[in-house]
Image (cartoon, rainbow, N blue to C red; front, side, top):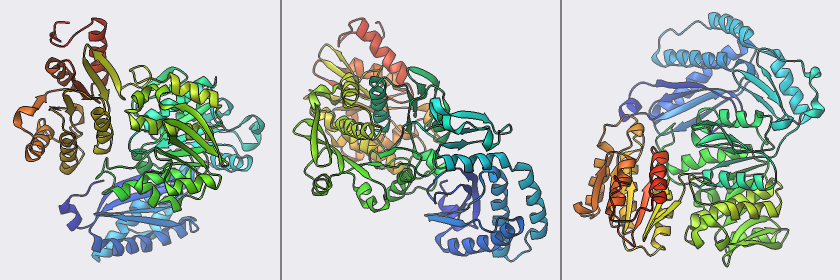
Length: 583
């Protein structure tokens, strides 16, 4: 939700009503939530009116023990209460009724009938309720096994040890073979940048262990080496799908902030062996009431509820500010082993994955273990790609928490390459004569800075970068991507259109914002080019290239097409100076 300035000054407006099915930005409980657009002055009177309307209704329908919670943010207010898992749709209607009654009270007019609402909602709860579901949930908790539910299915246990039924055809708890239902090792991975690469590294390590990995991510659902479905599956639905798959030995669940905000986590408190936050940087601000970096950091830290161990970045400022929130054991990872906080942690016997003199090392119980040298990790590009060294360290920390063998961890890191097969769209490297081409996903200033820092260490004669942005980002965010690119001394910038990510903006609007920002930053007009698509940008970059140049193709929408073009050119031994179109 992103209230406009006008809506923030007008009467309170209901913007969204939805179910929270797992730990979320408000609290750990399931229940309904509504998002209201209002001004800061209206927030407290609105909250009180909502609570005064809701409480008698909850008492009347037999939910008097349920609790309320709220979250305020610039331009809005979220209002939630806890509710049984088998009646969340009715709970949403109850929340909406309470808001309608609150608005009437605020405006001094007659509201809806409480007596009629109690009668109607009692009937709705009876229709929606599912007693066997709640009995299975309680029994799963007693037996210490995973319980998952959604609109269609209920399951207990996980992976090859799980069992799933239709939500409308459930057994009684006593009919379940609980001895056969077990957990599987499970990791949840979030962060602004690096989470997909970390998940893919972990997948390679799990396979090196001889186990079957199940992966839910922003790119696909994958079990073993089989892609089940492509698309963004980084929400709770993707997590449930992998955890229910009968072939999965170890679950690796990429967890994006969108799913956490909209539905909460796919797992309940303490259900994952380990959860990692790779880093926290500005991205997606303005969506779902997340207006600034602190609010985004709070969102990322929702994942702490699920993990029995946390893996955290010792160099991330927003993480360090919130470390007191974490009650479970912490494993730190860092490129800087000399940090005082980290040294104290290590000396007290804590777990840490750190870079020491070009070696990736593991610390546990005060003992150091050298795992492998940076030069042995293909995605580190000899150490130039420091962000991938950090990703390797975070993957080591998670793998240790999943009890993977050292041999499997090292084999995974040595065998994982920056190519379209292992890590599509992330630092994929091509050489054409004396020209280097890197295809990457960097789409925010933090990711772009890491990529350009690496690029400057490659001693290229000239550097070209293609940039664009999604339309749901603010004008300032769009400008910052452009000026970040120019601040690293690149020689040419191609502004590419992403027509599938306009999200309400007109064609040409985002490149124009970027061009204006570049000109204001001192970039000469002849250093700026335009392309109607990512594929056209790749064509233009290759036609411009000369021996010694480095081309950074930041590609999202047409990643497959750009990689296919480069692979075709490589197969046909294309050289700079030749026409791309004629190959």
